[in-house]
Amino acid sequence: MRLFLTGASGLVGSNILPVALRRGHEVIAVRGSWQGEIPGATQVIQVDLSDPHAVQSSILEAFPDAIINAAGVTEPFLCDRDPKGSASINVDLPKILARIAHHLSARLVHLSSEQIFDGNSAPYERDHTPSPSNLYGHQKAESEQRVHSGAPEHAVTLRLPLLNGNSPGGTRSLHERLFGLWASGQPARLFRDEIRQPCGADNAAEVVIEMCERPDLTGIFNWAGSEALSRLEMGRRILDRFGLPDDLVIGLAQREIPGGKDRPPDLSLDLAGLAGKLKTPLQDFATQLENLIVPRPFREWYHKQE
Ligand SMILES: NC(=O)c1ccc[n+]([C@@H]2O[C@H](COP(=O)([O-])OP(=O)(O)OC[C@H]3O[C@@H](n4cnc5c(N)ncnc54)[C@H](OP(=O)(O)O)[C@@H]3O)[C@@H](O)[C@H]2O)c1
Image (cartoon, rainbow, N blue to C red; front, side, top):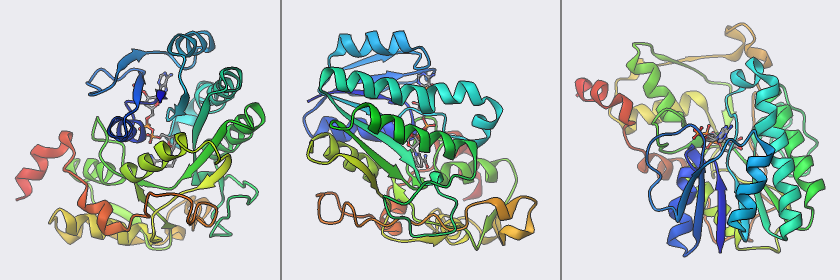
């Protein structure tokens, strides 16, 4: 298949590319401001995805069999800082992609987030009514609606949890953010009462490509890892994985910080919708840890710890 991949320079997109190539697909990889390499793509193009005309003309030129939307403004604070700009990527772009997918009869695989829920009714089934507690979650919930009203017969949305993995810049995933804190001289203060069900970006990438290949799957599906864990537990296991000292992680409860009680306490996802339908297995946390590397920007700091 010929795949048009937005967000190819992001955490998930960069993991999708090698899986797609391994399974024999061609990939037109879209980057935004990323200046580094995107190895293996059939073609790399730079497109400002907030420009609907640029989006439309680049897709029509590529004429793909499937569009994968892994682009996003994925930091909640960035959405709060620029509601309009973030909505152009998180809401308007998926809407345009759905219209084009419908027009081309192309498959559309869109990515959404556990953040569309408030964390008070976990585990969340795939048809649970969204209840976002921040603007990012609102935008992702709206994107799901736009995608499925625009291309009901061609689109599938994969809702993802907190992700482990290695990103091109080394600053995007769970352990990369922790390394960023540690390298700046701060311990990580992690909640013992905030539960997430992480999976690896590489594992999510396998599911995305499987979904491109499975036009019989339409609608919204949850995907996650096989274990729900507290953030504190995850932080401790990441320390252990890299042989770092225990005092780099401090446990606390959500109520101990201002606004902490507004954070979703438990975003575990019910995976029944996809159970038995995919070849990709669920990943446990130990497997996710095995795949992690020391993030490039923090290698010097890490080697000084040894
Ligand atoms: N990371 C997670 O833990 C997580 C969890 C659940 C769901 N998700 C979902 O998974 C998807 C991918 O997330 P991610 O973590 O991989 O994101 P990410 O690492 O923040 O990457 C975002 C991507 O979007 C591109 N982008 C943003 N604005 C653009 C613009 N105006 N023009 C062109 N490209 C633009 C970026 O390109 P440049 O960098 O080249 O500008 C980058 O490739 C999102 O839908 C997100 O909601 C992620």
